[in-house]
Length: 453
Ligand code: UDP
Image (cartoon, rainbow, N blue to C red; front, side):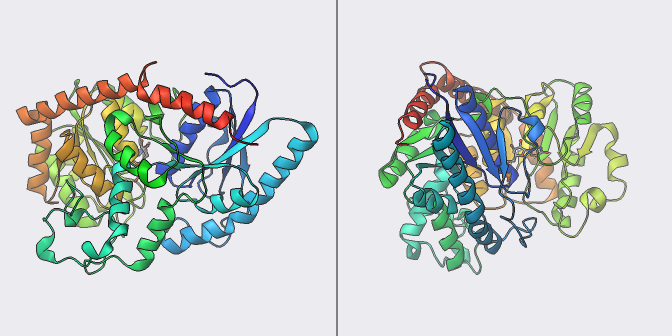
């Protein structure tokens, strides 16, 4: 259902790539439903305005003064939450006053990323309805909540327990605890931060970049806890129909021409997303694993992603010469286009939630190399529940070589491919007129339209 009168929504994204992208995609979805979309963003990692002429942008100037977000820490994220309060509040107050004067678009609500938890306080002060956007999987939030509720059941754990199942959290093991731990316990400030991120304050509802068809039981369990309406309307990147780039880094499109020259279903795409870092030992093991697998590969080595070195300089001597045309290395790829390319047969990934959804939606099976937080949960679901990925437990060149060959060449690899094709069909069905995501989106539009102004 399209809305009758123009209502505006203010979106407040978190400025990291994996958060900014789904918020902008949500903006495109809401814009296509008739809403005026205003994006209130930080100066750091500001979206490229020219890629989104359909949005109104507002920079929360001063929100990040003195904070170096390129080194994300809990302290920085708390400071950002504190410093952005005044700029957002001033802006919303101005909007509300103007609305009264000129009777323009009606401000319906503020939608904020769960890491920007300050927004709930600002919206409550102004008596504006707010809605939380969850950019993670429901399985991840469920694991956090289960652990918060009884941390003594989980911490500290012993090294000997690492492969034991986490109570009530099948298929997770102690080594998959999705929090950074020190000496097998999780520091209280980390738990505190994750609690803040999980809390919804007085927000009226939650929007999810996931699907009922994929995570229904988990969503039902979480809804019992939060007691507000849930709107799982994903996968955003498919529902949004937008082809605009949301990349913060410059995409190297030359890799598409390289893919055009490769045989169908032959290339392994390798990328660990926008945030995590590996050490140079892992880079070298990965390099030899890829080289020795003898499979063509496209590898994203993001600047700053290898501790202590700039991009590809830590690669073994002679590596690029040895792999020649069979391997291509770029600093940042147009990932959705890459995954949709007929030459791509597999994805060696850190299992960020966006990458996970993008891969499934292009029927690309995975090699899971999670490093932290939700990636650990997603990797277990992909490998143990959905069975569309092989988990890489040991970062060693012979293991990597074997796993790549298993994915690309073996019968087991073909089974993964069949399952990911089925998974994609289910997800696409959810987007059809009588599907769950489609229906939930209609309900969301009705819900926002009926919010008290
Ligand atoms: N991405 C991209 N090009 C790259 C690597 C990643 O466009 O070379 C995009 C990818 O498509 C995804 C996002 O960056 O939308 C990464 O988000 P994800 O949740 O997978 O991981 P994060 O970066 O948050 O760890």
